[in-house]
Length: 300
Image (cartoon, rainbow, N blue to C red; front, side, top):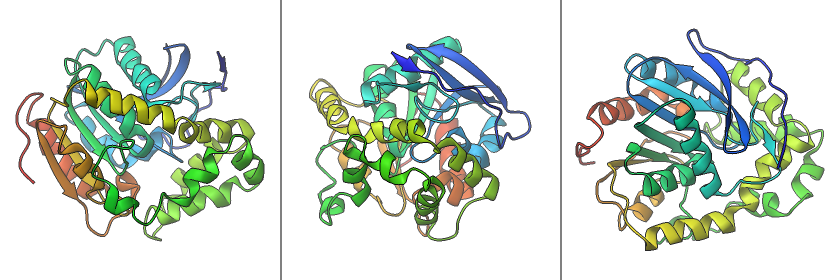
């Protein structure tokens, strides 16, 4: 069951990017497409849309078919009543690739896009040739104890209470989004057009409810991640990229469960890596993606 979100034109659409709206897994997904070649699926987090990737899509599209959706409930995709757990989001991603007739793809996830990217790679190693995950934690897997010693970030609890955050924040969405963009760029901010697009995407009670539903589904997502690890290993070549604040916590969670893992930390970089330090991210992404679907990643 879902609540539809009206399709609207992009506020920031780089030259050559095509926007399509596809029916997948019971919802409609707005997706930006750019370039030709081996497919790369980019999964954003909060408070983002596909436009999180605007500074890396062009360079990636020189050698790849870039696929950047608005995830369920975000941007111009369906504001679904449910399905915000990582397992369902992984099914969304799998169904999107199938709708685009993609038989193999590298999958890149950041923040809330990381758990579904991970589960998709665990479930469908035949589909996911390479995996890149950034600035997130994977449920309660061991390895993040040092990061969590200071406690879970304050907004996780705030967002988790049904109906609270969207009521408190009504009319103040811009200030709230700005806080995350400022913190996520170490105070440097982001391009005004991107910022304005994010603010519009997360304005209104329904938009906020969908965003916070990701946090309300975290207990379910955590169980799904634990079950996946109990039932197998991460066999696809994987790269974990950290910045501030997550650092190497995600890499440490992956070390015991991944067969082929390389980890990097981008120094002097905030949480929203693709907007804050896109050139440094590309220096890691491009050779990793170019090394083929099954080649061993470089050590790092």
